[in-house]
Image (tube, rainbow, N blue to C red; front, side):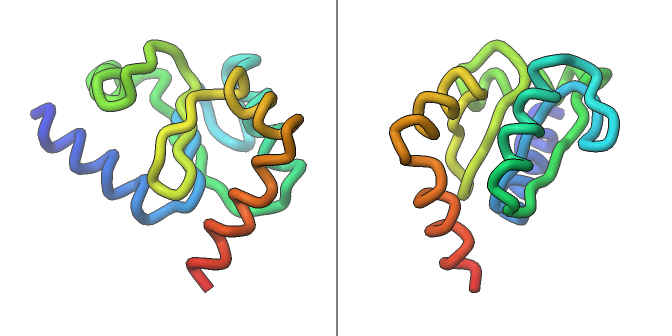
Length: 109
């Protein structure tokens, strides 16, 4: 069963340039950290997908194994795992996020 879930996750991060695995949806985040991450990406205006894993423990466990990151949300950009806003905020302050996002979306064009 774990392989099926991991394949589903790989497909999601391949099909979406930015994926946030969190608690709740984009329209209704169910925790402050997920809301903070949604707010973070809203500032940049690039499309992103939020996948609710609040009540999906097998998927949460697979994500933790795949990313070696125990907490939610988990952010993937361009297929790579980036952590959460603890990692992304300093990257933004250093001017790294916007060029990264522009590059990811230019490749898709």
